[in-house]
Length: 328
Length: 260
Image 1 (cartoon, each protein chain N blue to C red):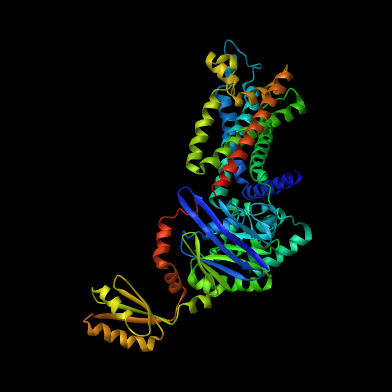
Image 2 (image 1 turned 135 degrees about the vertical axis):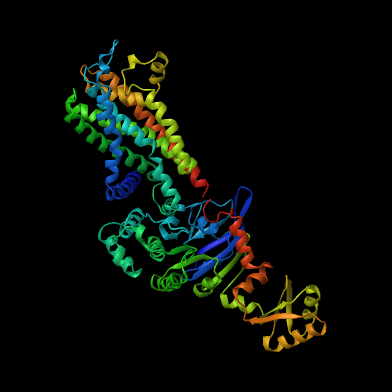
């Protein structure tokens, strides 16, 4: 059964088309990642699914309920962890959790017990009665997750769960989320612009770019869909165009593209292709600075399906932050 | 409806708990009214002897005290939107909006919290006034009326302040608007001086000034020969204004939701 179905969602803010027909489905019990650069429309998608904002077109169901038609039913069955922490910093961790439980309709012993259990689970028991202002970034983020879980939702939305955390806190957050996904029998939809995060956490993922889902699958499927390995050759100087044509003509090279002085190619086997690439270039008098090879990463997947480089796109999205991503 | 009330109660509880954690704030907020009562009241104590009169008492502090309760409630209200901006800035609201929480309670709780604090401060100011020799002519009912006046005075402008906060969503703009509204309305009232002593055009303007409505209602019950119909009328006007500004705040909340 699908816990989330999204069909052709559209949403614009002013002139910016934040969502341009987003479609995907998430099965019950899986961890699904929406991976994409800043401004791709991930946060907007989650806001629509969490009933914070209404789409201009398309439809979406969460836990079997329509997000526009029955928003309150959806709100009872979801937990939402926004991109920027929504905790009340002047209250204690316990007070935050208690209030969240009460507005979800919980009360009395059952609520107290659940809050105690979550504090334990998130490693916040010692800090439970301290004001959140004094929490570290990682603790605050764990409390955010706890707020989304108090009422035992069926579906948890995590919008950029580790953005802004230092690498150590990020890794421990990943462990935490993995344990939660198993222990709480949840469906988790997480958005991220970290490739490793999607790779680490998601059972399946959809790559989002410019308001659309570009491709969907397990991280392994996506990487395997790019046949072979990536070889990157850095040229000493010009004649890049020639180099592209030369390499493309070689046996065992599936694709090649040039960007500045970098020639990227996809080959059946790096060990066999590198010598022939180098000698072919040398024969034409094109000098080579460096050669690297690696197995396909999600970076390569993104490049392959969008024709654009993830890092550059991410940076552009951050600068022109207008697609409903982050604070507006 | 009962859900909205319960949620409002949870939200007010949240804000009062946070405030109680730093009770110094209530004390600090009282410094200003105390300065008016203790220093200004002494400085101008002979003003009641002015020809033309109209003070209804020879004790200036008795004349001033109920108006200071109202003034304090009014100025508190103009700032009450700051808490909303702080919640907006920290993204507390989006988190609540993804829950089944009553939308109205998110706005109304801010107004209720603001009015409750104004009433608590009113009680303190009245006790200090008693110590300074003020007597409330209408007795216990007088206390109730002055404090109800403070609550309504505050909620009328707290609704406006919340609405403006949701529209501008910036602290600096909020401060500018609070000052822009606060001082003119304060001076266009009989807070500090009898209405008969001020220029004619100001007397006319004061009739339409909600701050003056509150001052009249509170002062009537403190001074002898209370005009109860005037008290009732002015409290009713403040109540109507409170309903209108609460509706305005709720409307701006919907406008805010559309920007998410």
